Image (cartoon, rainbow, N blue to C red):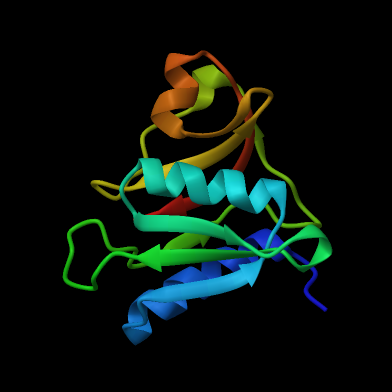
Amino acid sequence: MVNDPVSDMLIRIVNAQKAGKSTVLFSYSKFRHEIAKVLERAGYLASLDKKGRKIKKNLEVTLNPTDSPKAINNIKLFSKPSRRLYVKYSQIRPYRISGGLVLISTSKGVMTDKEASTAKLGGQLIAGIW
């Protein structure tokens, strides 16, 4: 049993990217689907597809090629189940790795750091991706 399904999903994506896999499959949840949609919108994922019905739903993510400039090389998990990190919109700073982004769970859904600061929304820091 996984204690933190969101970090498990992100780590599976990074490991599959490093191993040269083209797709990753994991169980579906609305929150994971929102995170995957943000990563797809930012160009870090090629596509995503919800498969199955009722309680047997899965989320299949197609990764970018490893040599792509938008391939996910690494992640930094900020929030954990035992320690959640929250920021106000005025405290949101661009991620220090050039071309990277920060995922933030706001009251309007999951957003990147740029989208959240433009909308003037703070929230829970999820992870930094580059």
